[in-house]
Length: 328
Image 1 (cartoon, helix red, strand yellow):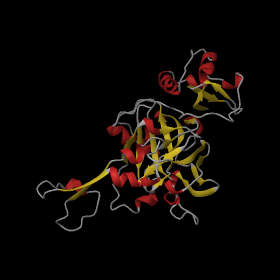
Image 2 (tube, rainbow, N blue to C red):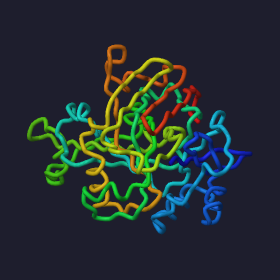
Image 3 (cartoon, rainbow, N blue to C red):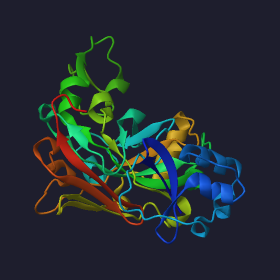
Image 4 (cartoon, rainbow, N blue to C red):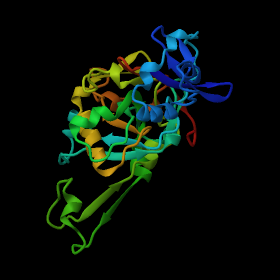
């Protein structure tokens, strides 16, 4: 089953797509099932945590529907409590690291960066290298803390497509700082992640992904959340990214450095995961002849047209590029 959110008459409306491909208002479907009017996707996710059989009671095809064509998309879950992301979770990208950290690296994005399919990615060309990052993202459906890998898939409500738009220009111009520690303050753990350049190297580098990944419109998501029961193996999904009609990447979630289960389990050791949290698992961006560096070959601040990401069976996320001084 697929759930999403659209704009209708200036307001967000949660919707369901039936097996016939038509859409219905979520509140109408839940009311017909005797569950009352559940009006938004976050409330639905939380309700399924309390009523595990809830989704099986929904019968969207029993109600009249309307075509999906022309839908004015909002992010499918517009109000997540947390957007947690895994950095550098790709076997090819990890080859360039000084040292493999051995565990997933995490960072947060603000919900304000999210946009739905069909909305513009707004970029100031002066922000330097801005690139798309095709990712699979999970919607957490159950509270999870200190769970094992073999328990991880059980806490997922569903999956969606996330374009983790990233400005390396903003990252290194505004989100980074380097400091040199006095030798008596330099601790060994400060440098476990990189190779040192001699015994006197006490430089430490701090990178904060706040602007570079969290700027408004840098979080396209959707258009649908596909429930977890429809995904046989999230580590076996094919990802295709396009700039207009040109394929810039064809990759596979099997190329993740850390499996989806490992990422969720590791996240739960440090963060309490709650229903409605989003966890995005990292970039799938292998290159080809025309785009040798894959997604890194697509410089949004210099390109025109549309970025699309297709992951079967999650759907297709499409967003036009817009250049504008100062961004959105």
